[in-house]
Length: 264
Ligand SMILES: [Zn+2]
Image (cartoon, rainbow, N blue to C red):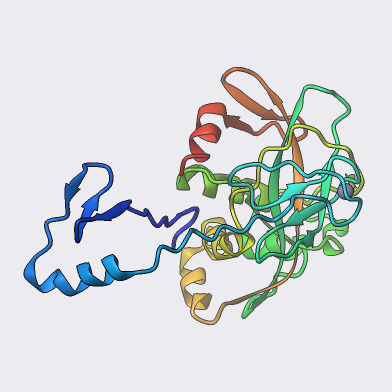
């Protein structure tokens, strides 16, 4: 399983001159073997096609305002009408998001995926179910029988140890109630982890939350995870030079780890 892995294709520039193919950086002919002569001939005779680059205008499909063209961002947020969009596949798909609002101004919002997952083979509909399944040290409260259970995962890249820690911490915490759908959040850390990878992390999160590993191993082969619904939740963090502190839960995020994650 890969979380936050990125594969890149690197194009190496070449040019053709005097019937030879040259490395455009080293300005040397490519040292082609005899058996590669055919490849060389194909390259030489290939038509001089220009690169086809398609640009998607970053305008909000809802209100027409300019959307920020952030490099690597998988989701773009409209400042004007407070909507969020996934611009992949040449179309904009609306993404549900809400904000755990903080009144202060000096707040950075970090995005987390909140996933409603159908787990077949185990009763995991409510937060009370999680307490039972994971044997969490929490006194049962009637309200948790009515509180839906969600898996949570950072929507940005982090090293795997920290990533799993955040998955555990937030999944084991009752979901916030005072979320606001139409909140003009500024300073949103960019989303770089797709929902598919967040879903893949659910099994690891569940396994690490279940203190009874024998029980987990008994049921793991019958577990099936189906994503039923998802949304982004923006969590409020107060920033200092070294760390970000979740203003509601007190969990801390090392600034360097967050910045390093951008390069994973
Ligand atoms: Zn808009």
